[in-house]
Length: 230
Image (cartoon, rainbow, N blue to C red; front, side):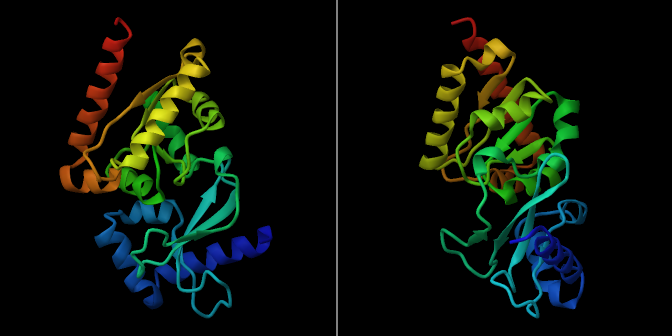
């Protein structure tokens, strides 16, 4: 997909979301996903109008921007589908991109810490609850390049992947990578945050609130600090 076509789809989708044709999509984002209007607008979420003859028509649109706010790719979801793979997106190298970094870098810099989650909804939901230093790997593993991007803004990277087996395995791999690459020698610490079994970050914060997530982060950092003296 060319840059112009991509931009036109995003612009048309943003416009459609806030009109009659987007009511059910907007309701879904607000009520089912717990997103604030400010975050929906800030992340430029939308719904691709059905009048557009494209494979994305009728789907929610999540544009991916780089840290300089350049539109890089489009990620989409059919909110009517509950299958394990409801997402559809352009081909892009996930190892070089973090979803939401264009919105989160200021919060990361201010808090001197980043929260890394797996999914786009996780990012948007945590931002909606005031944790504006959150980014996502878009379901892929955390990479050295991800860590390098974040190290420009902070020295603490909280890895808060899903509480399922796959999420915990991904966390283990991230920690091994950090150890093998000796991140601490460069002033970067990767801190694992364990969620209850089968809960995603957005599920957890909607059920337990921001204070509970902040407590998880503080406890995780304290454990890592104690481990430094083992």
